[in-house]
Picture 1 (cartoon, rainbow, N blue to C red):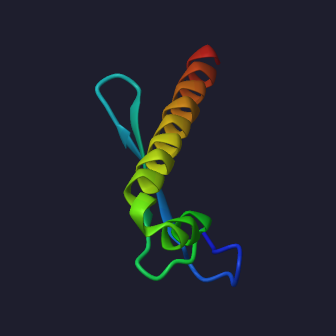
Picture 2: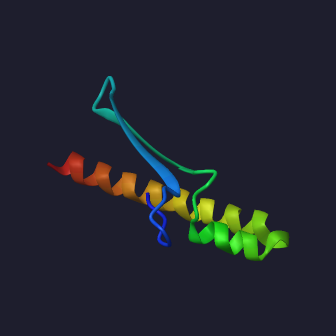
Length: 80
């Protein structure tokens, strides 16, 4: 995913689909890249004392979003 400021890679997103005994298994993950200039990195840089909390909250938001996306995919795919 490109940075909104200069287009350099900020995060890496991966979706892996594997066959399973019944249906498939979908794994989704993300990783902040060391040199990526994401909005969250800017927030953490501006508030070093709160950086841990800022990153933790964003990680939680992203994880919740991924879970929601995968649940919706499952519901749609199983309904067809």
